[in-house]
Amino acid sequence: MALSFRTDAYIDGRWRQGARRFQVYNPATQDVIAEVPDLGATETEEAVAAAHAAFPAWAAKPAKERAAIMRAWFDLMIADLDRLGRLISLEGGKPIAEAKGEAAYGAAFVEWFGEEAKRAYGRTIPTTTATRRYVTIKQPIGVCAAITPWNFPMAMITRKAGPALAAGNTIVLKPPHQTPLTALALAELAEKAGVPKGVFNVVTTTDAAAAGKVLCESPLVRKFSFTGSTAIGKKLGAACVGSTVKRISLELGGNAPLLIFADADLDLAVKGAIASKFRNAGQTCVCANRILVEDAVYDAFSQKLADAVSKLKVGPGDQAGVDIGPLIDGKAIEKVERMVAEALAAGATALTGGTKHPAGAQFYTPTVLANVTRDMRVNTEEIFGPVAPLIRFKSEDEAVSIANSTEFGLAAYFFTKDVNRAWRVAERIEAGMVSVNDGIFSNEVIPFGGIKESGLGREGGVEGLEEYMETKFVNFGGFA
Ligand code: SIN
Image 1 (tube, helix red, strand yellow):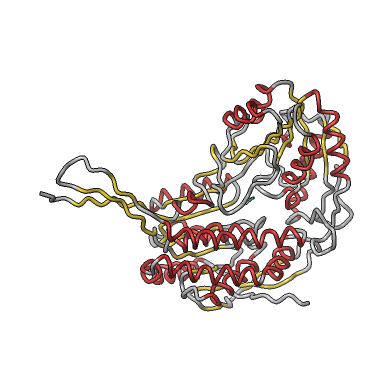
Image 2 (cartoon, protein in one colour):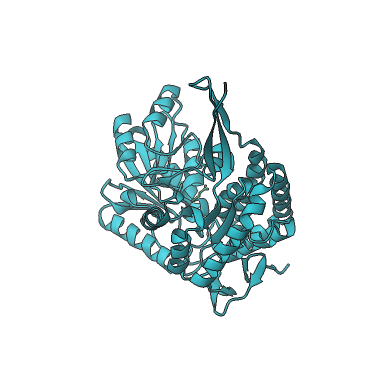
């Protein structure tokens, strides 16, 4: 069945064509899928003004009413899961089953935060003085702005828009130029669900700098959230704070270690390593970037992993049974090729893969690299591709030291059957999220986020709602 989707931007409850348009590509074929408006600073300002005008009425609605609208939005997403999954796959390249998984994951944030809004409790604080009573109340922040990445065209939007709207804020979203169609599909469903005009706005553009400047510097925007690279996040964060002291949430780069201890269940570890490393062809911020393996099981684990990885099926996301889709663009392929070539030249060996894949210009063969050393870029930098570098360690201390030798601190994984070690290592690893004996952990109820240069704040869970609310303290004085 043909896939139908909106191709106009959505500002103040109206579908906007824009004077110029840009092309959206299928990363599997490089074919043009659609053209969408290439808006600029003026339209971004209009969207901010619309969100500002819509804020008082949306904020004044009881949480139960906002939750009912969000429930309708969620129900429409679930009813439309097939189309949303196909759209995510078409513009983002994910295998269709994985893309539908993302659609369900994305919808869950809208359900969870709509429900959680009803429990946005303040506190009563025992007084210090007989004549006073103290309370705190939770209030929305105001207009929120979000800049989202292409690797999760839907879930990274709802993980920000869900808590923003639930708490009574309005939002202006700038989706990535690679995957704007899923964002517009969400706007279409929001409109159908009865989200009032101006509450959810989508500005499509290739001019990220112009839109970003408005979103970071406008005094009408009070909260800014970004998911993307650490380098850009630092600049945007500085602009937000330096201009108008906005609240900020930053979900930035990672360099997740995955540790295999000698006492691990090796089959479970292979399953976990594949789930983590090869999710979205290695293009997630929480993908295991490097795999550290204890000396005693290095050879056995490497062989098992290489065997399993060599069986992964590569191809366009809409082809049956595909595990690994294309990388997002030519630059991504070039980066992976360069990093692997450098590692091989420096003494690493490819147990499987190590080259581009014949499925097309943007496909890379799932790769396992042995004999990787700590100085190689595949250990020190985020690969963002289907390449698993294996590094040998001899002790728990050494493993933790290698794992922590990075400026990043987003996710970390390890496999062990020793419960004492599990606690010890979970506490010692410098990461915002640690997963023991499991390669996948993301969902709507957990606080997702990093420490060190991987970001500020948490998305998802009760912590995710806090990011979109102010805590106001109120003193009642004058008691006799
Ligand atoms: C990301 O790559 O930024 C998000 C990954 C996830 O939500 O699991």
